[in-house]
Image 1 (cartoon, rainbow, N blue to C red):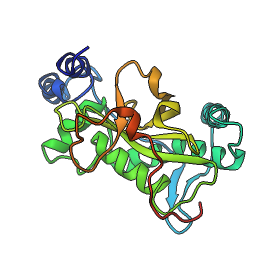
Image 2: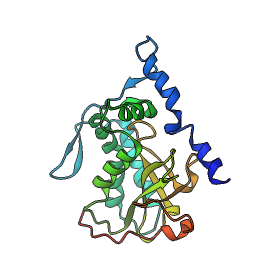
Image 3: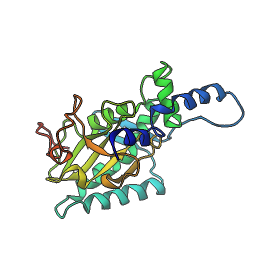
Image 4: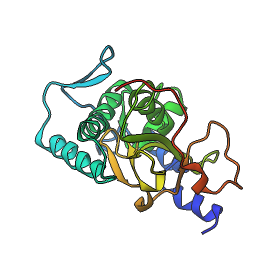
Length: 228
C-alpha cells in the first residue's frame, strides 16, 4: 500500500470527515442525539502528586486496569508490576479527566470541528497526546518500561498522535498504543502492529525524513527523567 492509499484509508477516521462533521453541527439541534456531551463523574486530578483521583472506580474500569496491567507485564519478563499498574491506571483514568477538562463532545471528529472553529480550546488528537505525554512521560523515570509518543501520517491532513508503552529496551513495534482520542475519553489500547487503522512511527518534532526506516526510530529517548 503506498502513502496515498494509506492516507485515504485514514480519511474515514480523521479530519477529512470535516463535511459530515459540519452537518452534525447543523443537525445538533434536532431531536436525534447525533452528538452529545461526554462527561465522567467522580474523577479529578491531583497536580501536586501527579495522579488521577477517582472517588469510585467501577467494575468495568477496574477490569480494564487489570487487563492492561497484565498486558503490559507480558511485554517483557522483567516488567515491574507496580510500574505496569501505575501506567495502566493512569492510562484508563486520566483520559476521563481530560475529557471533562476539554468539555468534550462525541463523536471525536465533532470535537475537532468545535476546536477548529474556536468553540473549544482543546480536544484534537495531538492535544490528547501532548497532555498524556506530559502526564505519563515528562519528568518520570521508569526502570522497566519505556513510554513514547508515536504518530501516524505525520505532517499530513490525516495525522494521528498517541503514546505507546513498551518494555525497557524494546522498540515501538513491541508496544501497546494508548489512545484517548479515538473513543472520546474511553481508552483504546491495542498492540501497535495490530492496530487496524494506523501505521505508527516514532513521533518527531519536525516532519520526519522519509528515507529513515521505521526500524531506526525505536530507540529509547535520551531524556532526563525523574522518578514516577
